[in-house]
Amino acid sequence: MPEVPAKLYVEKLLKESRSDARRLALVSAAVKDSALRAMADELEADEQAILAANERDVDALGASYEGDVGKDRMKDRMKELVARVRLTAESIKEMADRLRVVADLPDPVGAVTGRWERPDGLQVERVRVPIGVIGVISEMTPLVTVESIALCLKSGNLCVFRGAPEWKETHRALETALRRAVERSGLAAGPWIVIDRPDKEIALELIRSGKNLDALITRGGMGLRKVVMEQAKVPVLCHDGGLTHLYVDGEVDLPLAQNVVINSKVQRAAAANSLDTLLVEQIVGRQFLPPLINRLLEQFKVEVRGCPKTIALMGQMAMTGHTAIVPATDADWRTQFLGPILAVKMVEGLDEAIAHIAGHGPCLTAVIATDRYESAMRFAREVDAGAVLVNASSRLNAGDGFGLGADIGLGTARLHAKGPIGLEQLTCEKYVAFGTGQLRAPHPVPDTYFDAIMLKRA
Image 1 (cartoon, one colour):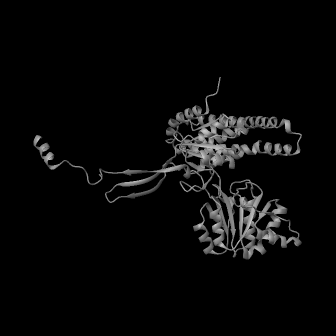
Image 2: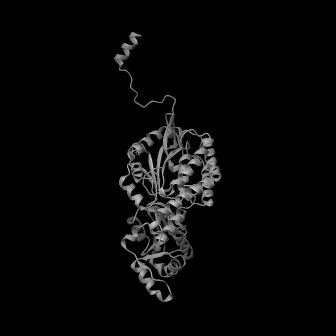
Image 3: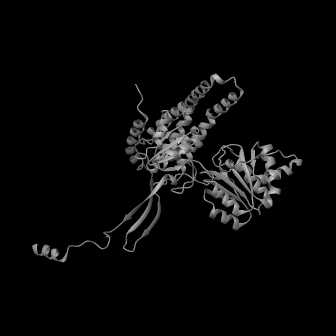
């Protein structure tokens, strides 16, 4: 039987989901929390079945590279991919733990964010409500799948999830376990949809579904982000795109600054909020950069790409045993590396640093290392970024780092939300007003002549 065309398939799916989304928005916090805890328990109980399904995904990946295994580079590439796709018992435990964390978070739905009384006695409230139907397109691991479903469920949104085909069997096993738990917990509304079809047209149609989808979240690489930016007909809440900059001020605690730089770059180099560009004020460059770059190159195997001033400085320091660095290109200042590469530039001061960040955006995370309160406050005020941190690692720009408990991604958009997209950011606000017969003046009344006639007839 031929497959339903992608456009019709997605349209039908989203139209059917609308009524479920309305019911889900009304589910109580107690029922949602009970469902999330049941989902966590079910994942742990179904661990072996999930790992077996994951092993089938690993085998399928190996089969796709069978003809090229003789090549050394292909062998290395295959090892990397297998390590990325394979889950372990610890992976399942982490998923279950994340579900319980989300269950313990306060429910944002129904929260009153503002309340006031008008002179005429009208009581006005601003209340958080779910967005509705949220599409999530992910190239990330199944942990992101579980987090996306959990955060959308807790915030009263119906999640339409399309994952990477590398985890096709894993996603099926996860959904089976999660749905079984939800049904047992008494949640009647279908709280999510996992799209099983791997064809790319499905993802494209989801991106273009402006009529039936309320918002879109993408988690993946530059290719996916480029397609979304070019073709999305749906409001995009976040896509993890944007650069991370760190500026080291002329007055700074050098050991603190070095630790912040290293943690920002090395703690997890592939993360969206890992450091891309390091800006250093010239006055401390000679003292700060050589030992830092030496550690990055030799201890952490980070490829450092420097501006001409940095190259000249390190060339002068070559006699002390420092490894040479690579000259940076114009493209490097605009690249989110998502790996062990760092661009380094020496600047004259705060003005040039702020100008550089403004000219090489969007900025996902901006960090300043400084002992000057005035510099910190100016940087925080003037830099346009998803999050600004002072004397702290860029890796803290995340839901757990900011005490939100969990996030579904990081945003840089000027509308809706910047920074970690947590439960609150998965809601919007509506106004509710309570009156006692208040009317908008002037109130329409019968003309005097017609009023007199009406009274006479009575």
